[in-house]
Length: 176
Image (cartoon, rainbow, N blue to C red; front, top):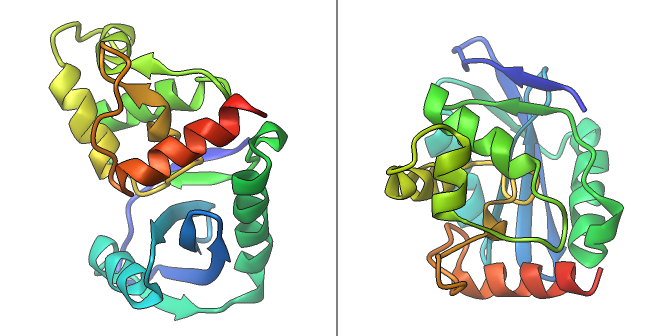
């Protein structure tokens, strides 16, 4: 799986497509380097506004055929998490966020870890809150599985895409 870390410039074009999944509307966006956003919401217009706010310097182009295959993979993954989600990713974030996101990508389907576990694994034992912040900033839902991170008690904590969606993905992954 290819991973690229880059910055968006005003010359960049991001293509996107939106579809319906069991979690609601899903928007998948791709730069020339890979998938740079997977966003989830109930409303398509909210997804498009979120994408524009995340990449204000880029040229945003809707409904490009090149993105439809990525979108289909994401929707299939929601339905059958055991298949995995093999997508080339173009992740953008701070060095700390990128370390956290890489650790999250290594969590197997059907497993969870705590925020403290992730903090220890990135060498910052006391930064569970910073890990939670990195999860909240993650623009690539599902492919960077922040939904697999829980509180030390095992309880579900906040999730950028809603706790109900987090609960549903964990349920789906538990039976995968």
